[in-house]
Image (cartoon, rainbow, N blue to C red):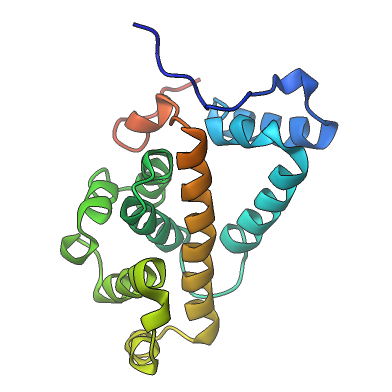
Amino acid sequence: MNPPAMSRYPVPELKNLPADLQQRILQVQEKAGFVPNVFLALAHRPAEWRAFMAYHDALLLKETGSLTKGEREMIIVATSAANQCLYCVVAHGAILRVYEKNPLVADQVAVNPMKADITPRQRAMLAFALKVCNHSAALEDADFDALRQHGLDEEDIWDIGAITAFFGLSNRMANLSGMRPNAEFYLMGRVPRAKA
């Protein structure tokens, strides 16, 4: 049986992409040891790829705010699970396991963040993210106050909401395109990485 296609849409070959996309994808490949399918699947439209990656980087690679890299990934995994996005749950679950050095946390967060082995601050953060994901029109001051009680400030709260909203877009594009996670993601953070 042949594995499912990476995407319902045409997936360009790396050599046929604009130079800036090629450079970024090769950097990711060098660091990860493989090219995550999202980079090639979304390269179907280079201008949109650039905009997507710019906002992704602004949210996830920023040096300010109190959210850790692992907490940012928790938000992605919890909201991607709520949006039933296979690609993002698997891919970002792998990244979460690596950042947190915990092979169980991603599965727990994806299935039921309120019962995951995480801190009360992280549980409050994910409860807020899930409300932004599923019921943003119902947000009220008490939702913000609950986060402030855990030491999160207005900029942290913006980050939680922005990451949630951005991955709402990402989840829907992954589902639209039928994007499949790379096989490498399934074991990442569960078994020791092979030495080169």
